[in-house]
Length: 166
View 1 (tube, rainbow, N blue to C red):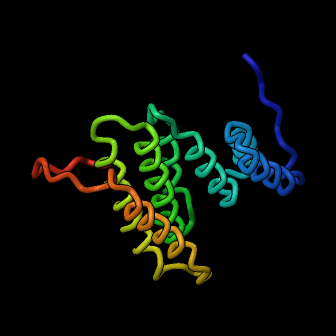
View 2: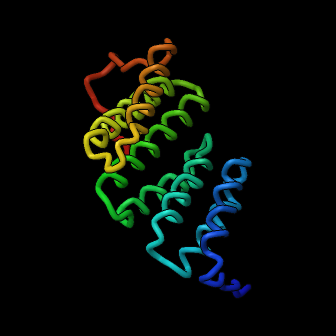
C-alpha cells in the first residue's frame, strides 16, 4: 500500500522529544507512530521502547484491546531487569485503571487484582532502582492510596479461585 519514509538517524533525538510531547498532549497514537519510526532505524533504542510501551498503555480502553499484549511483548527488549519489572508494573497499573473506569460486574475485583500485581512488581523494583529516584515508591503509594480510597477495590471473597492475570 504505502512505503513508509525512513527517519534520518541524526533526527532520532528530536523525534523522541516529539513523541514525549505527543504523549503529554494525550495523543498516544502519534507518539506510538514516532516511536515505531525511531525503532525502525534503531531497534534497541531504550527510550523509544519505553515511550512506545507508555504510549500503548495510554491507549488501553474499555475493551482491553491489543495494546495490552503489544506493550507486554516489548518488555523483554528492555535492557535491564529493573526496567522490565518496573514497566510491567506500569502496564498492570494502567490495566487496573482500565477495569476501574470500565465498571460493571467484577470490575472492582479485577482492578484490585491488577493493582496488587502492580504493587508487587513495584515492590520488587524498588531495591533494583539503579538511579535511586524512588519512582517505584511513588507509584506503589499511588496504587495503595487508590485502593484505600475506593470501597469497590476489594479482593473477592466469593470464590476460592484466583483469576489469571494475563
